Length: 258
Image: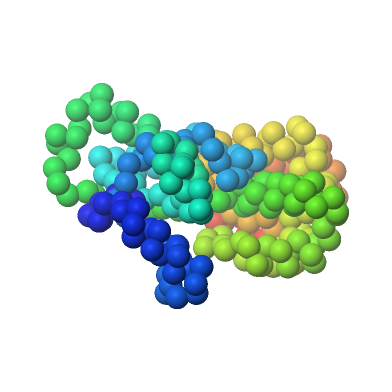
């Protein structure tokens, strides 16, 4: 983490980890100043979730419009210190990390670091760091498939919900309930199983970023229901809606589920 932080101290980290093992610690995180180069830029905790260039560029223009530190969250375990040479595993949003690297390269070329001074201007909004509904679908489906592959067992929606409830913390977007998962998996197994429609959805996500008019998976569900779940018909209507959004016939958030 950047900003005005105490520099990284291995002794403090080790002390906290030992206290955690003994059940004596009141916190499960260690915050310190470090070098962003310690973090692997290529490793991803959610490798199957799409990363959108439009979102990265948006973060560059807003959060990192001028030089400032980045807050990164990395996984810590007994092997943590062996990962310090560029192999730390980041679990915070990778779009923010990529935007920071690209913005730093931009600022170095423009010699902006001399202009920035000592005070960092914190970005206006971090909503672009959060998963869109479509990214959430890919995240959960990827988790399900990986879990099934490792355990050699199929997960029911109920079991998937139980596992996610114990392991997934959602800080933005729609609540991940069992009914949410039922809709999500139904979409994945029907509309999103069609390659051409899936590519169309990803193209719209790249075009609009987190400002997509599709703000809920229930909008996709209602769209599928209205078109009798036929991918060609849904694709045609979806294209028409995206075209209307581009021409500002309606705004973000005006497509609401029934």
